[in-house]
Length: 396
Image 1 (tube, rainbow, N blue to C red):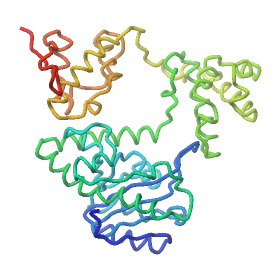
Image 2 (cartoon, helix red, strand yellow; image 1 turned 180 degrees about the horizontal axis):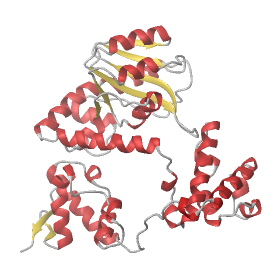
Image 3 (tube, rainbow, N blue to C red; image 1 turned 120 degrees about the vertical axis):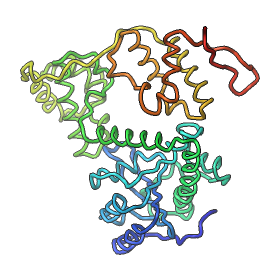
Image 4 (cartoon, rainbow, N blue to C red; image 1 turned 135 degrees about the horizontal axis):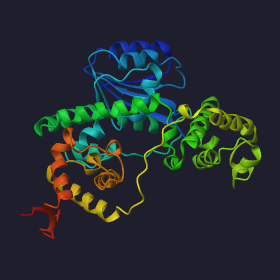
């Protein structure tokens, strides 16, 4: 255990306010959260774990309703905010105050830039980087239950105890490999994308949307907005209100008649009958729109088999990333590479292709991928018994 700091259990507003004042003067704020998300519109925050220079605080968010002093502190001052896999921590903060955590350092993302797997669990990174071992025995616990057991409290403390030491060591590795700027470029892009997803309706991301015509897309948009409002009002998962496949089918049919809904297999078992009239109104609103107000047709590539080409590019990416000591999944996924191949074959527009020709990704694999498409490099078996038996060879 690294812990030599005071351990606080904060369960009242006054104690939280005082802690935030002290924490705001710290060089860093290490943060983790425990929440319950199953079947909810948004996760319910049950616990904050916060480590600063001198203290570790376990904040009972079920007993303290006004967390604004904490979020205000987190988004101001000169400290670095340290997290691991920061998505939910970022969203709790952004939803609460509309601002981003100060100087965000994501352990998982930083580790990927210096050769660790991505995504890597917190406990694995602690062991690999510090040599310490964390027992993760509460991953399935119900954090709404009170009182918290000592085992739960110890687990919560461990989740933030090592974040600062990890940050120090990973920062040194980023500097020594000259990848600090790459990290900040990526975290800025990640934050921008997350804010966009949080701020804009995401109806166009429903699976199957690209197959719909413009009028059907208008129906999908109205149905998505209806579902989202119902889910938010009832604090239920949107897909429990109307599943995605039914959204697509309703939009495709484009009929506001209840008889049309009932003819869809499984509709009456999966959608509450009280929604029937609201669904009809949503589809009718879409049908009443003039053509000039309809959504634009979504780009859809031709149906071709990119399996072998995608596998080839994925293998090249793996070889390059092992040589460069960076996680392949951070640079690009198998789907990214298939999309890149589809664009090179004229199947999808450039705007839908993950960019590997600019920024830090270009420096890692951009030229190699281009050479692969040009046919000027080849893969060969170099040393079958080595950790990486393949190598890339320039063709003359």
